Length: 235
Ligand SMILES: *[C@@H]1O[C@H](CO)[C@@H](O)[C@H](O)[C@H]1NC(C)=O
Ligand SMILES: *[C@@H]1O[C@H](CO)[C@@H](O)[C@H](O)[C@H]1NC(C)=O
Image (cartoon, rainbow, N blue to C red; front, top):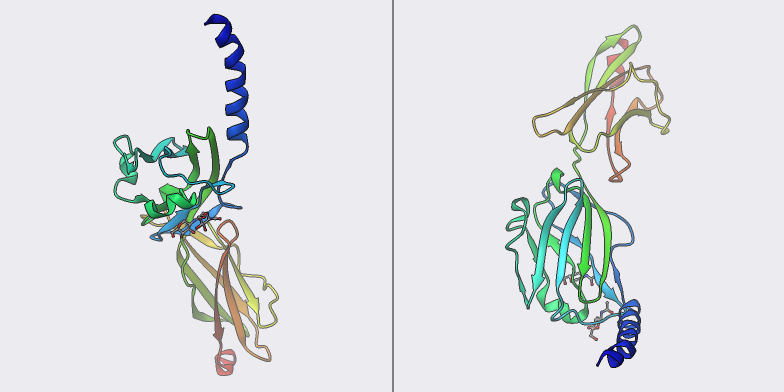
């Protein structure tokens, strides 16, 4: 037996190595971005296409804090060690497993869901991980805040952003205007950013001005335009 094992074990090693290295576990091409309250799908599938029926699938979050997100085995969601913050919010597409789709659906995302997620298939000894970024956006609101010399002071306000966005004033040709100082910022009770920024504008051909709020990490932009009636300038 000793000799037999000595001969067979290396072959088993090669067999398993070859068997599993052919298949990769593939996630999204880029990070996944969602907005607060959204339902989001975290994509994951073995490639080339193999059935995942009967496989074990473990979804975890690696950072900022390690959490058990979802555990699937023996043909069912076996979530006894699931972190409380994910309770009742995770599901897999059971009817899709035969197509190799082990994606996770996460409902009602919150800011604290942001982090690096790992999809691990112990059966294949393969995993993938990727970043989920949860953001929040809101529409800016413009108002006329008075006059200053020949100019009109405009105020732009936008609350409910995450992560912290940029706020800018532009003229009708899209040129950034020098604002009356940097944006004033504060965090609300839900940790979202609220911004306010003033600009003093002189009369132009169009009297149209735009406030733009932009968050590059979540790639969201919101704009609002105001038309200031000519008579406001004459004051
Ligand atoms: C998995 O199935 C879900 C539900 O049909 C679908 O939305 C998702 O795009 C699929 N993902 C992959 C990676 O095939
Ligand atoms: C995987 O194979 C199944 C069955 O042949 C097919 O229905 C499904 O569309 C395939 N999925 C992908 C991602 O190729």
